[in-house]
Image 1 (cartoon, rainbow, N blue to C red):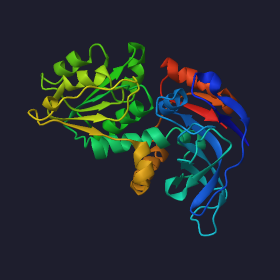
Image 2: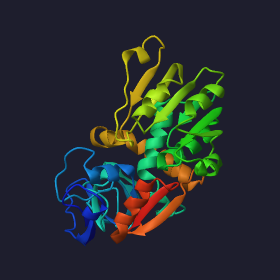
Image 3: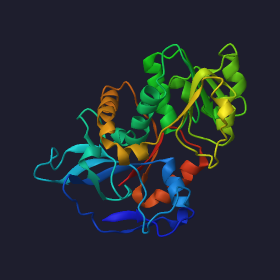
Length: 321
């Protein structure tokens, strides 16, 4: 099979389009013929070596959309079933294997291409909003990196919930129209969001802030987080650690919650299935969607990474396998 394999950390030139062995499945696993894999910023960080050590050769990628190729005799899946999945050992490949716990059927009314946008960012967003942030209608919330995949879904989920005030931060105001179309009430840059949050909350601050950037954005977020507010920290695309002090939380009764979908897939996979079902239904009923910035052929994965690194995109970037 064809796959994108890397043998060392580095720039996009470490991504090689080459032959690889088709994975062999064990009990309670399925083999999936990949149609699309999404590109996530975690892929960029892993390629560079920013997510810790890895065993080489390495195949990147967190999720796929495709069809079941091989399933066990006692499996609830059959050859030809249309699915999304979180595979083992990467997703930039023609065939992947996955634990049945992390494979989910998709209905006929949902195209495989649209389904490919969903797995990581949509399931993560639903958990962040409803389970971790526990957002309420009367809240003022802030969504950092609002034009990205997670931000795009968080905006729509907040709108569906009827959240009173949604403030979106973007790297460039050129993305203002896009994020407003998804549900943002206020759009601002990272340079001005503290003032904007205080201005639109009568100086009370935001009730919930979703932070995937870290670094100084974490510190700035705490400067405009309301009493009893929640900072939801779920990434560090800046590559820098945010500085948090005990004085930031105890006297103000605020809290900081961290979440990782990767950790949850590994240690609590059973938690994901009911969330996946909810998200699939939202996409199938067209209550939520994710715009596709561009679809690249698998062999052009390096170009897909360059687009992601440029930050000059809206929605999702996909690889067609």
